Amino acid sequence: MTEGSVPRLVLSLAVPSMVSMVVTALYNVVDAAFVGRLSTEATAGIGIGFAYMAFIQAVGFFFGHGSGNYISRALGAQRYGQAGVMASTGFFTPLLLGMMAALVGLPLLPELVRLLGAPPDVVPYGCKYLRYILMASPFMMSALTLNNQLRLQGNARFGMVGIVSGALLNIVLDPLLIFVFRMGVSGASLATAISQFAAWGLLLWGTMRDGSVHISLSQFRPSLHVYKEITAGGLPSLCRQAFNCLSAVMLNYAAARYAPEGHEASAVAAFAVVSRTTMFAFSLILGFLQGFQPVCGFNYGAHKYGRVLQSYLFAYSVSTAMLIVLSALGYIFAPQIIALFRREDPMLIAIGSRALRWQCLAFPLVTLSTATNMLFQNIRMPLRSTLLSISRQGLFFIPAVLVLPRLLGIHGVELTQPVADLCTFLLSIPFAVWIVRRLRASQFSPDAERHHRQQ
Image 1: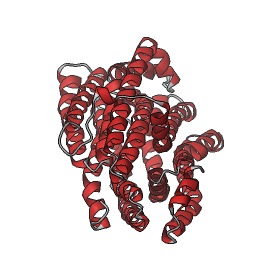
Image 2: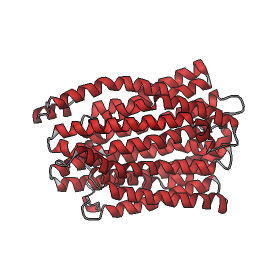
Image 3: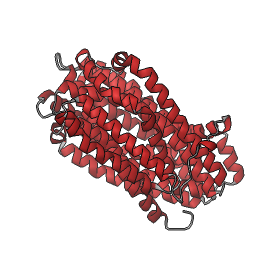
Image 4: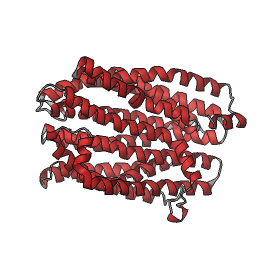
């Protein structure tokens, strides 16, 4: 980690991370593709569930990135005992929180679905989809934590094996439960729950192998110090995913409110399809960017700041080029992509195609804020990282979704995300310039490091 070629290290870690992230996004895409054969309302129902999935990811990534970033720095500094305590505490805490979420959410399921923005004719489908997802919440949250812990300690390949195995199982179970056993939307939910549990078991087994930081109940030592460290490394991820959840809910409300009369379900379903499509593409880029995080963390712990900068610039350049290509393909084939999910609804295709093309125009701008946010997160500058992490779906998306639809109707809803992406890019430029100059000047002495931790 601290001696080999930086581009080669980033690439070797990025490939399994990319596979893991794409496969994680594949759960939602496969569900939407199969459920789209049932009805528009059913497609909208799983779109409503997307907001709760964002909540699961908020918890899982918070503990995964928070504990994982600490683990990578501890391993770089050869503090193995501290790494074990952090890994175990980071794993068991989201497992317990997921149990609490299930116990609270299941008795209030219809109210929860309405709260997430479901129109009246979509509520029954949202309930069917969320029921098994709620039951699986403990395993889904802690599986995300395990995957990020394995990745950030340099064992991304086994994390990939666990995630891919679960996704392949989901692809097999979806048509079986939806169509053969005639479970409909509930079948898609149950398939996801079973697959996520299987992935959780494989990931947990992966922590027991040689070369991994082991998880054990005896090392589960919750304390203010441990959670402070998790918060320092995971707060940006928590804020980003929490705003993803909030923005998904607000998007559901806006789509239903400003949809052409009688087409509320079509509008909600259209944005659900666009969200899954763009998330699938972005997960590829996010996986690549995650490849530089262990390199960054290890070298920062070893005080090799030139290599930190090199990994950042390489990851940003390659990921931007990749996203330009993906965005061009998405713009050209937007109608065909949307039709893959629900060919029978022309209104869904029309709204979804316009929204996808607008997003593709601004999509390549996203990598600057994401890469810079990850860099700040790994070198323990939580305030700067958190600000960037909340900007896209928080600082800019929320005002845009409140203002633009009032002015432009459904077209304003379609423009909300690209406007937020452009504003986030402009905000990220001075942050990126500042950190590059600091790293190039080699100003990260131990005294400077302590100073920045206090910021």
